[in-house]
Length: 263
Image 1: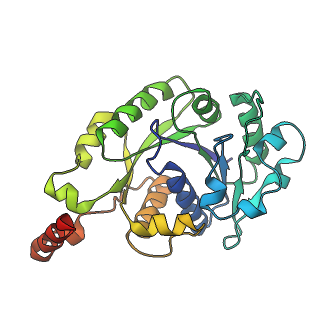
Image 2: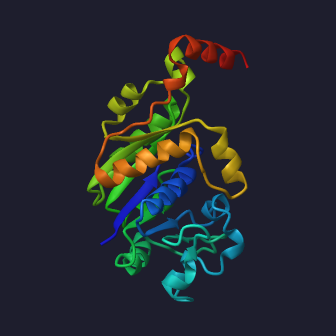
């Protein structure tokens, strides 16, 4: 039976879709069968992030409306055969899609996959509720900023209304130099504020923006390692957190911090 995990944030612009896509890639690299589902109907961008928009024939609304079979709407990754994507619709068309509809779609995939990742829309309106409804687990994605933490706190409270068995925290876009300089909220403060287990810290990395803007994926570097640890933590229950500050420690690290601060 597949683990059904929704990735949510409350606030937009925290990199949730990018985290969702790269988490799916890394879980598939570990040998698991993974499907990533975009539930942001009308404002979808998972297909763009993954560079598969030209392969999309059907979408999740076509499945819900019975225009195609569930597996017909899936897009298989070009490089990882065990990784699939179910795109969202480019327009809403006033279709009354409920959480039950999304749950029915997920039920069609339960026996075929190990992981079902649900990319939840930003905010806490109807889109949030229909994405969370079929999930058993939730990952809350935040950045180390007060506005993101505040919105995430609202999400954590709302998740208590659903059948969510476990919650986990992912801190995205963490800058090690600013963290050591005291210019960002530290990790312990964020975890204490939200009171949910920390599963991963993803560093601010220009490579993420450059690869995702052209439909690519991370091959190496800091973020790639951070996503590998995150995937292992989710599957194994381990607690290996990527250290964003390692290259900014010591004398040379001090020099790097101050050079970066001046740029």
